[in-house]
Amino acid sequence: MSSYDPNNIFAKILRGEIPCGKVYEDDHVLAFKDINPQAPVHILVIPKGEYVSISDFGAKASAEEIKAFFDAVSKIAEEQGLSGEGFRTITNAGLNGGQEVPHFHLHILGGRRLGPMLTKLAA
Image (cartoon, rainbow, N blue to C red):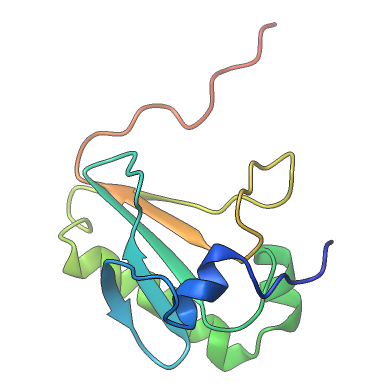
């Protein structure tokens, strides 16, 4: 696992150097609209701590941070009106997982019926 880069875009957003379309914030979590949405609702949820990936977050975050993060995901989905019809959460980890920003983040996608997550492998 690579070390945390304090100059990644999400770290800059957390420091207020780059604006974001904030939809939620508490002591441990910031959530904002994705600038390249893949669904009618596409929100990124990030912890305020310096965690590279979900594995890093799970290994190093406090129980309070972990609880706050997942409580926030549930609250945001409810506030966005996604709980009734359903939504998808995705977190990418590492190169093979397609992670583009080296700061743990979770995508909340919804607002329409979503297609299959991955294409099937050829037999």
